[in-house]
Length: 543
Image 1 (cartoon, rainbow, N blue to C red):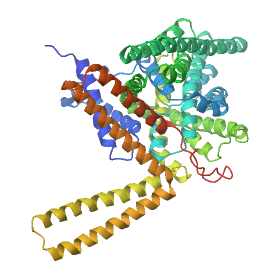
Image 2 (image 1 turned 90 degrees about the horizontal axis):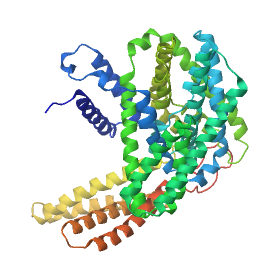
Image 3 (image 1 turned 30 degrees about the vertical axis):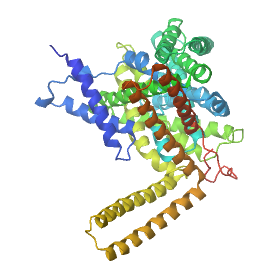
């Protein structure tokens, strides 16, 4: 049987994704950043004349705008919105709204003006570049937030900004591309077009999300309901694009409606659990592929050739981000919800660029004279934000005192590891005593030492539990989740062996899934602060 080179490329892609994932478990590098580094390294090797790489065509692993915008982006946006509660989103709607609409417009204007001055592009093309790099990508940042225990509301703010500014940036880029091609611009017509495209996307997404929620409420089959959500994610995007409105905004709206209406009110716990697990895997696979392919697409030779223009573009993006975050932050800080001042520093540095910017720049017409330069400038910005900002985000969060989980977890995990080592030695000591290898007097002395050391560590862990109540709660929840998974596995084994009929298995599975969903909902909820911060400047407690 003939094996196509594309088949080999896909298998190689999955193997690299898995290998990088395994490697990063022992490293303190964010997984998406590690994938970009791996992609850049692989791209250098594939472009080199090495004979052992001749069987793998670089062109088989290629990012295209259709691949990102039509295959990857709807699924990633839909999965992200499934987890966002409308009540939590309403608390941060003002800062998210300011960053997602005025923030994108300001970013495009400031970046365009600086690139116009520094690189020498004409005004329409410079503003087009500003719109292309206005969309933020939070995946690497959110992974760091999760690891360090950054405040939940801060993570929600970063994720919410990205969800909505993706659509704004894509719409603005299309409008400005029309200006570049036509050579004329009508401000009134442009503003009206912007409002229609964004508003139309919201209406179509809300309508399809409501319709899907009604359908899933009438069905109790997790396979069919997951299929309907897949149709919703991609069908909403295609439908919105067919009506020439924003497919990105439509998918976000549809996901929010289904996640807060359909999934929470119209789905059984078993279906909801299967749904979340399915979309979690899809998001992991697509995100991994995107970041690896970003690295593969980077041509270091071209970037070095356009080093100074790329450097000016990076500086322009950073300066525009600073003006937007700190300027709009002065408006938001005094208003409810009150944002701690040091959150602005994280928001500024969290403005990473990624898949959406690349999709838009790759979709530019091939006969556009400035397309090669815009490609290099965009790749330079994306590479800098992912590698430099991505790798320094965790130290920044810790330095600002926002890594609320890191020091507590580190001490707890250290104590628990000590106790596990101690128990292992203690078990071996008892085995030696049982086999009469160790004399009774030696055993008695060592046994007393192990007991005393174990009691000391137990007291230290108990003290941590008393001072940090959420540690015990998290440990209790995680252990319960683990035990529920064991029970679910045992139930499947009973069904496989014919020791329980289908009706019994279904009823027991529903009970287990109800408890599992409830515990997972607790883990998604923001932690409750022991006391609110007195003012914005001190390190905020997790909200």
